[in-house]
Length: 184
Image (cartoon, rainbow, N blue to C red; front, side):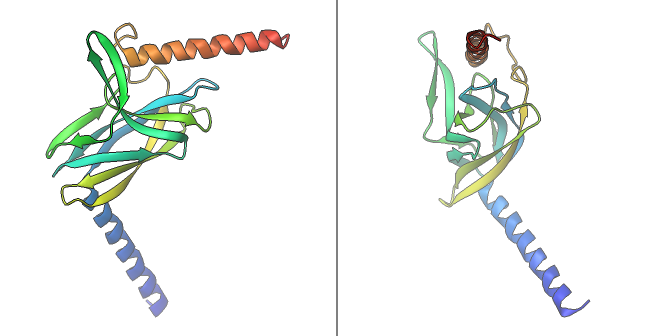
């Protein structure tokens, strides 16, 4: 092996160790990330995944190149009404798991840059703060799935699913009206 090859091998090893150290420092494991597909012109959708941490971390933000605005949201029942709100932080407890799922916590992608079709991949950056106070960014590659995917409850009992069903129906109606207006 010549000097150039040795240097390349050494640099590759250092890069790999640095990358692994950065991921380990974040102490956040992300499993089964996915995003609900959209209909043409739909301005928003949700991203879902399972988050776990050995020592506990706090998700303090999110961003995505696929959306103008990306926020961590919570849906919960208040006085018999399902409400959705943005969260400033989301705690992932030490040794615990937090499910981001339809009708619960999720990453809201708003002001979408393009329609999201099943099979696409959406990059999401989760900003986390460890117990040591250090902030890290974890890159997530979320597969876009059919808009009916992952909906554990029927639409009648899943408010987030109801919202997506209503949004889909309205978009389809608007498309039909537009096409009729064009004489097609």
